[in-house]
Image 1 (cartoon, one colour):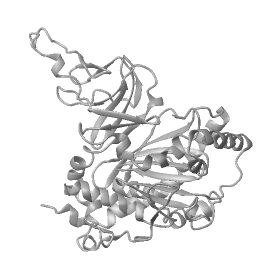
Image 2 (cartoon, rainbow, N blue to C red):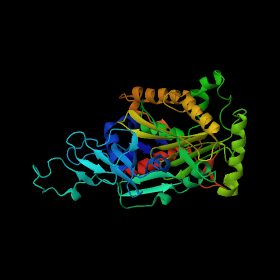
Image 3 (cartoon, helix red, strand yellow):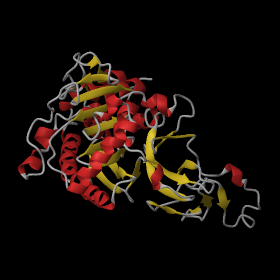
Image 4 (tube, one colour):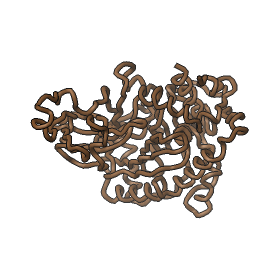
Length: 418
């Protein structure tokens, strides 16, 4: 039996390659992590009307996020109770019933079994439909429009789970009076690599940017430098937030924004003074990147905000779902600029995303041999040098550091060793 605690050395800050390429590790992750944590499933603006829905995953489980006929938000397993086929194969839409294409069982958006072919002739009216509705995830909660669900009926609330991370999420999703909405649709693609490589990078690895994204500088779409910022501890810092969450905040010169966008940025800064604390308002519209353990990442950069979920698809493949967010009150011109920037940078064909995908896929393919597996990965950058500050929560260290990144593996080890 695998000693999962031995795969993460807390004293040396190292992680075994087995954490990223071992099938047995992956199978246990699905049970011990993805059925016992709060997982992001969508944004409230994506299902505004009764009977709206979208399809996504919680770990390896396909799920339906719905707003039922009464307006309540629900999360249901997208799996027919008869033979297990997905009852909905579309990405999103509005429907009063989901009809399983295999045998025709029909469910409403609340999960109740409404229709069964040959109920009288072949089941003799003896099938208790109340017992055979879609399986409902027992806990669903929202934070600033971000919807999370949890298979574990017990345990801490979403607020408790987010902890210090909520303070930093607010810098992005609570900086304007009327909040944010999601752009229509979702980018969906697959990448080589382990889901934790993506989650750790967004949760505290700006160290890679100067090397991996050098091509952006070379073609004139990025800024030269080491991505450490000029105001350490003040506006340029990384955070170990607890519970495996991590966050990066730093300022870079992204060039002059178009006038309509620059004017809207000023509006956001004015509104942030009312929606945030004075300490938070000072940080608005910096570059902000973070991961909510285990697999939700968010990046706000040069005017756009991208949310992505790293769905595990085996130890060496990631199923990516990516959503764009924009201020509800943004002018149409700003929304169009934001949408285009998302596509150019962090999308299935975005330049940054292509760089990252190559790195994660290469790691998955070439570090799993019997010799390399014996030698751990190094997460020692900045260890022992973080500090607590009065004006911001969490353990703080200026870029570059890996204290937030290693925090993800501390949480991973805790959960896997239970």
